[in-house]
Image 1: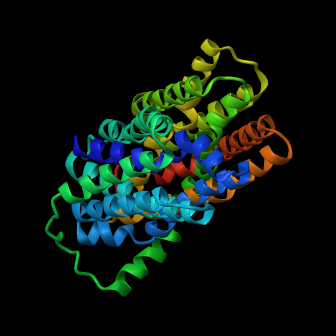
Image 2: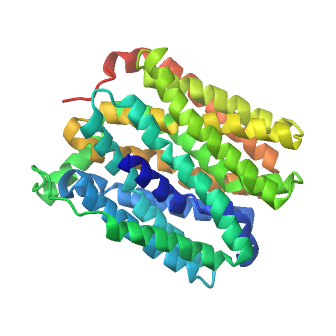
Length: 387
């Protein structure tokens, strides 16, 4: 499936900061807070692009939007690969995030157009490309960085994205795409006032904070716990394998056990993830136990995404899935932009374990918040897209 391929290779670039974090930190002599700020700038890039994804996806067409996305990611990888200082490598990852901001809305629209009303399972498969791409990055990029250099790993990313940008066929502008810029701006701000979108997305911003803090600091934390770099990277791959399983498992569970009530499923995932973050900080792990914990933590703390994007695609009108997806990504990105540097500051000032416990407590609180909103959400979300 093309959407799975695009998600996988898009995330190969977008998630590269996680396996490359130890190399970036040592090459540029960064603190944990500075390292976390790179993650924030990736998401600031995605947030900036998200304000325009509705125009690119719904009006210019999905393939054209994807060509722009991978072209921008190739450019960002080249900028990061040629960086001589901290501001330059931050700029490169900002551009990567800017390009990646188009990929999820484009592929959401593709799946809904091709598979509705039987879209949930396919959406889960498509979203499994996120951890698959991250796992490929975790396996390949550290090897390139170890045997060659950090610069060579970033150039490899540029070659992959550049090849895709050239290879994707440009599509014909879809009917109804010739609306005015003013009309799009009106739709954009109207979407921000959608109560359902706000009630669902703002609590999920805390899951985004937990996910990106985990991806940013996991390898560095496992090194801190005494695991060699190779085992730390292998454990990251196990974490991402768990997230693949989670993206397939949760969305199907919401279909069968929760009668398509995705918001209730998200509340359950938040509770499980919160408890696991706290457990992660309390126990001294051997390699086998660390592998099991990495897998189940990946299932919940990263595997939630397919359930969320399916819910957003169901809330959105059929002709504005790109716009709703973009705005929802802007909302949840705030959790990463504000939360990841906070996580780094907690690490620098207190400890890694304090950071994991703080995230866990907030996720449990947000789980209870979503659970308390269930009566309202169940009444207004039908589980099928709006016409």
